[in-house]
Image 1 (cartoon, rainbow, N blue to C red):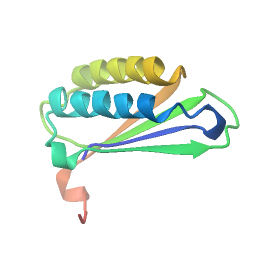
Image 2: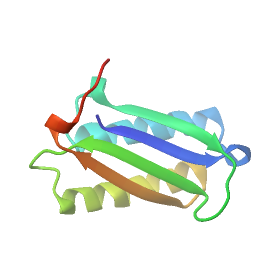
Image 3: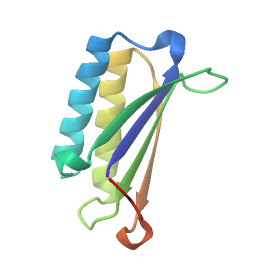
Length: 108
């Protein structure tokens, strides 16, 4: 954890080079600002049929730890919003969900 999932309309999915840059920048944001171990960062892109709302939607699931305060997550979301816009041209709605370690059951 963190898991970053970005949903965007299939027809507006940016070129592979942009997704590679977005992946690198998201990874840096997660390992730097959220202090996540590289092997625990997962980033995926999902092409969708857009119905309503912002053209992109980013969902971040992360483990709650003391240093990931509201202030840290606010800056994280601000920076994530900027890198999504820069690499896709799309405005994203961003939602972060923190989970306490005892509530996380995971494999691989």
